[in-house]
Length: 330
Image 1 (cartoon, rainbow, N blue to C red):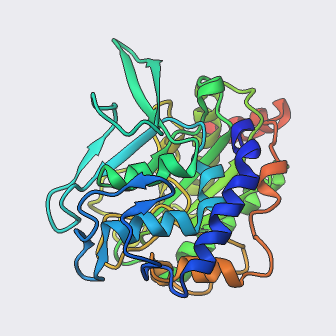
Image 2 (cartoon, rainbow, N blue to C red):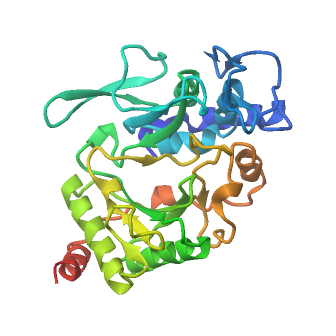
């Protein structure tokens, strides 16, 4: 969690508690107001998910309800966003660089790119996250580094993307294999759904290694796994020929690449959400985690499966780096 995220935690918990007590259902309006955490929502009744009947104001209230859960995952990180101003049934587009206009709760940062300086949005608070909903943003994707140390990531992500012929139990097996390989390198990992058919395996890091070192390490781990079962796993991105394989996407760890934020919805029918889970909670296919189910599940949880994530930042040791790189290069 960023310093600002820790500082805002008591206020976020208060907001979330208020949201829980003003509504018995996550998306049921507590009153007729179109203001959420002080953010005025224009066109509140516009349907974002026509198939599920979920409106713009309901998306904003979802964020209010899960404030204490989502803000630590998004605060301090540059964003790439999926903009669906008329809902997911109309054309959507990726929004990487900030537009000239944006709600005041969102922070703007300037980051040096290859040939220019790019301006990015950062959401440090629940007001900022709700402001994204007000802008018509449906998906929130985050960098692996924070603006405090942009060149040194504080997490690694392996994106497991199954071909259409891969059953869910094989995706779970792949995630467990990545976890076990990382464990041999003394790196603990956490798992979340992507909001699609895949999983993300995430390792929290101390921001010490450069982006290139992190990319090389994640590639080496991925290639080592592919060598164990080349019929099941691949690092080749072409879709043709991998209908029954799982792509291990290590390029989520490239400098400006992103992965969908925990608890962000996806711009897909069903309003699925990227859901952090425990390693023992992967028995059900990920379609159950939606804007209609997540908040109530969080209310009923006895413990947070990711509670240790924030205190478990690792260093990729020289020995681990050398070991996995040696396997990759042989």
